[in-house]
Amino acid sequence: MASTHLCSKLAVEIIDMILRDVGPGHLQPLLTVNSFFYSITLRRLYHTIVLHSSTNSIHLFRTLLRNSSLPPLVRTLDVNFATVSPTRNLYLLFHSVLLRLSALTSLTIELPRHHSPIWIFEGCMFKLKQFTTSHLCRLPLARFLDSQPSITDLTLRGFNDSTSSMFLFLDAPLSHTTTSSSSQPFTLLPSSLPNLTTFNAVHASAPIVRAIMTGRPVRVVSIPLFPNSVEESFSALQAGCGELRRLSVISFDPQAPRFLFEEVAKRFRKLEALHLVVLMADFTNEHLAASGRYLKSFDSLKYITCVASTKDTNTRTEECSLATEWHRLCPSLQTIILPKGRVWFHGRIGECDWSCLDDEDEAGE
Image (cartoon, rainbow, N blue to C red; front, side, top):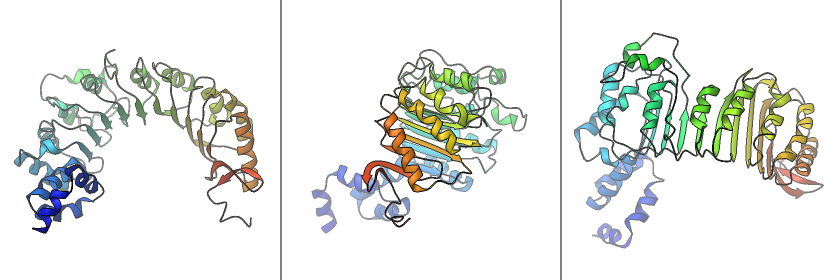
């Protein structure tokens, strides 16, 4: 009786908010409290599903197919098949489940590199807001994106095309999609993805980035930058119809420290956050000092991150001086992360207008 009285005093929304912070292992016992808690807990238990093993995936898929009341509860699904080498039967089982997830709004699918079974989406009725996939960036994927006008957050992890004939049978269609369409260029309809605001490209080349950006109100972007494609890639970013506010660049160009700040600054003046990851080159003190002058081009840049290897050794005082100079050139800056990993915040401690996370620990430096 005590539990029933408790339930009458707490709004369902309050209990649901509390259960959002409870892990699946601790949710399951709540199913046995009473019918009231069973209903709320079941909805929360199936709201977000994360599957990273084939055994768990098969068990969960069969459970969803056996009980028709469960699929409508699923809002977020994260499936990782990248390390399990799924068979066609597993994909068919997955397809049967997707057909029933009519209320799904967030979907993440990681696949083995040479798998791109776009047919698993055929006949699905869900309307996604967030979509992350490693499907190959080819025409079949573009046609699926054409059918999802509600997507606001898109992440493409797949390569532009497939150079291997391995697992070709997995890409075979269930109905009208032809294998010849898989080799055609990735192009979207002009009316596709009208609400897209966040786009992350992991392996996609400049033409794919342009196809996604063109005419769309994207404000947050993450792209790779490959050698000899700097102009093409940044030009592709400018094809959007909105002002970029947050930009993350993962550069594989050995020359990036010489040009990266300049190329970004002359194109995207309205940025509020800039994150640069340089993987194939050292970012020396000389590069950092020389890059500062380009910060004057930004109107409202608040956060900047420069992650890179460096052979130079910098004291906290030297980094503080660099942060102070950058702030002089760009007064809107509030947070700076430099190659050594120190996080600097604008705010006076001692003789410097900037402080870092380890100021107290290194007070005796």
